[in-house]
Length: 450
Image (cartoon, rainbow, N blue to C red; front, side, top):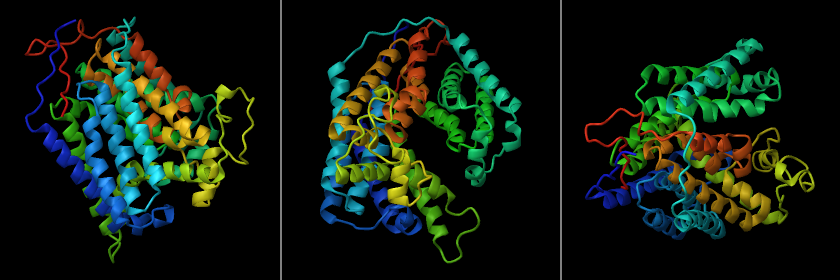
């Protein structure tokens, strides 16, 4: 394999990252207090600023990133991603909504355990791979195109819609129109085949193929009415562009600061006297509320409910229990949280590893899931040695978001394509023989720790 030299750490990177996280935490707090509570208080966001907890949260927000390993590998970014979109927003709620210290400790403890697992495992053996880059890229493209054609053939065209405001009206009908098997097929395509293939096309400078993947993702969104699907290719492209820079981590946090600032401006217009117009508030709702604050709040709701009841599921709703464990709940878990905290039993209040881990086995469940996530991150690091740090980081971006923020870890494995992503990384042959040469002689340029 061609030589790969890590880029030198930018001189002031640690200071800049410290300042970036400080600004990000402050921006989230201001946006929450000034706009989010007023705009979305009906969704459980309350204003109860506790100065002592706010101070403690601020200190944790700027000190915890210092414990993230500084080796330039996928786990470095994955840990910053988990911190920036799960831990730090939880600390914002801890200080601004006066959440319990035990909950904040559980969040911090789970994050520290993930880091400890990554450090403890170290370097795993690198899978050798069986399939070439071009073959796998075109396989993902063909599979995605075939999926779209099958959905169209089954009558999906009648539900084709690209208006985000109508997705909830059409989602159930579009799902009922397809065989139940598509409950498993659709996530495999939208969360694995398209993102993975797009990452390959971007890294290997295939603009036409990249555009095809984006178009297929847009069609998949239009046919299924799952609005997250429309964002997946743009998240992949965003990650890919960020990984080209030696300031990757700092730019990532900087982009989140920009998202918070734009969202705050949008919500200020929405809350103004004239209402700001028809689409006012959409950016703030989709980016600040949904992408940054909602999942940490849902984690707290899961923790709060099962702390009060002290009745855990022990994976009764999972296939690994083989139906031998009876659920103590009258509703499915996600619908129960929707009923208890939003008065909407039809709402599927999905959450990531922290909330679902606690619901299944309390703090032991969180610890088990955190250790498994650390092991998965270590596997990604091992794959990056035969591929590239940029590619593995980019190709796993959607699976990362799903298992950390929006789904039970075991469900992520079996239903949301995490296992498929792991298998694709394992069977992919090394890149060095197929990548175009760079001017420096290095076939792959990993991002630096910053």
